[in-house]
Length: 96
Image 1 (cartoon, rainbow, N blue to C red):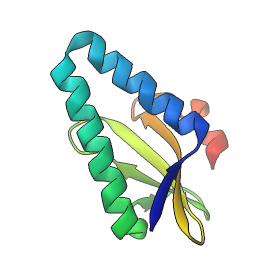
Image 2 (tube, rainbow, N blue to C red; image 1 turned 30 degrees about the horizontal axis):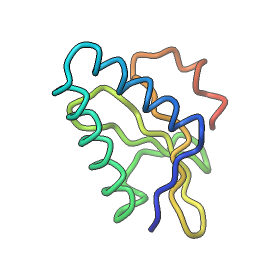
Image 3 (cartoon, helix red, strand yellow; image 1 turned 60 degrees about the horizontal axis):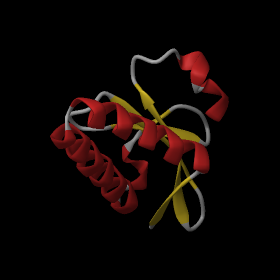
Image 4 (cartoon, helix red, strand yellow; image 1 turned 90 degrees about the horizontal axis):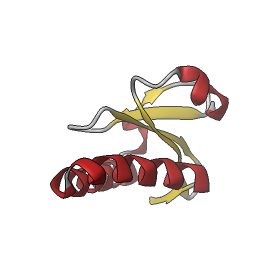
């Protein structure tokens, strides 16, 4: 199954990448590797994440404390958010 990012989710993932890149190029590279591993997993096993609502699920990235919030559509998994797990849920609850 294809995995696609909304513009907002892409911006959030780039913001996280920039945060890690300012601290360590190695950490930034590892973040991207972990995000790619998450998308690969979701592509093969889209129901692996825990349900957040009737249409929305979350997948906890390995190593980094980020939630990949997504929806399963007919032909694709849509990543609609990449948020730090400690971030106030009020920031991302609208995605549900």
